[in-house]
Image 1 (spheres, chains in turn yellow, brown):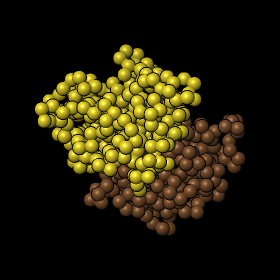
Image 2: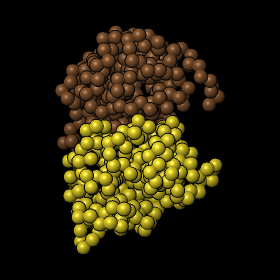
Image 3: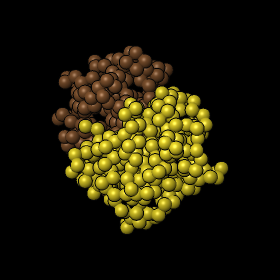
Image 4: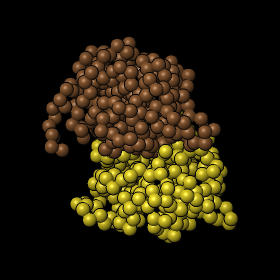
Length: 251
Length: 210
C-alpha cells in the first residue's frame, strides 16, 4: 500500500536555512545539507526547500545548494521559490532536484504549468497554492497571503490539474501558524475534486493533527516546518503514532 | 565508510550509464559516488565494452525516450549485451516489448507490456511516493526484506508476469516493481531516491556476476 508522506519544509535564504532549528547533534543548523541529511535519517519521506532569497545572485547560490543536497540526500526533494521560466526549472532538474514547486509565476502565467509538464513530465511540477477564506469563498493569495487574487481556489486547482500539474501543495493561510490543526474541510473537498496527489500544509501543532488530516481529508502527504525544526514533533514518534492509528507510513 | 577507496568493488569493472538524454542522472551518479562504485558514461558502442555493468536510466515519456535511444545508434548493441544490465524507471520500461505511452514499440528484451494506470481503479496518477515491494528470491534483492518500501514516480506500469517478475507491488492492481530476463534487470522505483534500501539495490547490482 502507498504510504502517506511526511514532509519537513525548510526555508532557505542565500543557500542557508533560516528558521531556527534545535536539533542537538547538528554542527551547523544553517547548513541545508546537514539538516536535510538529518531529516532523511529520522525517516522524513521527502523534503521541500523554499528559497526566499531576493538578490539577483540567487540562482547561482540555489543551484550550488541543490547540487550539494542531491549529493548527500537519498530521498526525493522539491525546490520552490522564484521559478518563473523553463530555464530555471531545467537548471534545478540538472542539479538533482526531483520536483519544482511554482506559485505566483503560475498565477501570472498559467501556461507555464503546461510548458513545464511537457518539458519535464507532470511528476516534476508541483503547484503551490496559498488559500484564504474571504467572504464565504476560498481565494488564492500570493506573497505569503498578503496579496489576494481574483482566483477561487477550487477553480484554480482544477485548472492547474488540467494544465498538467502533477501534485498540489495546498497551504491554508487561515490555519498557517495557528498550530490548531490542518484545514481538513477544505483539503478534503479539494482532494475529492482532483486525481493528482495533494500535500496538506498549514496548521500542524501536534501529532493528532497529522492523524486527523490523513483520516478526515485522506490527503497524500502532510507538510510542516516549525514543529519539526524545533523538535516539538519527532518524525519517528509521529510515524509510530500514525501507524497505531492504522495510517500507512514508511517506518 | 570504511572502504573509502576509489577502486571498483570486487567483481565490478564499473558501471556504464547509457547517456541518451532521457532525464537527469545527477542523483544516480551521486548515489554511486556515495557507494564508492565507479562509473562512466556510455556514448558509443565502444564504450559499452569498457564496463562490467550497464545502467539504462530514464524519466519522462517512454515513447520519446525510445526515440532518443534509437538516435544513439546503440539499440542493437544493447540487445546483444551479456553483462548485467539494469533499467531504472523509464529505463526499465524500455527493455519491455511495448508501451501504451506513445503506443511505442520498445527494445523487446523482456516480453511484457508497459500499460497506463487506470484512474477508474480509484487511484491517483501519477503513482507517487513510497510503496511496499515484495521481492522474490533474487540476487538483486539480496538482503531486502519483504514489504520494504521504495520510492516510485510513474504513470505507466509493467504488467505482472510471474515468469519475469522478481518483485511486485500493488497500486490499484498488482504490477511488477522489478523484472528480470537473463542478464537484463529492471526496477520501476528509483533506487537512488529510496533511502538505504535503494542503495542496497544499487550495491547488489554492482556486485552481480553472471
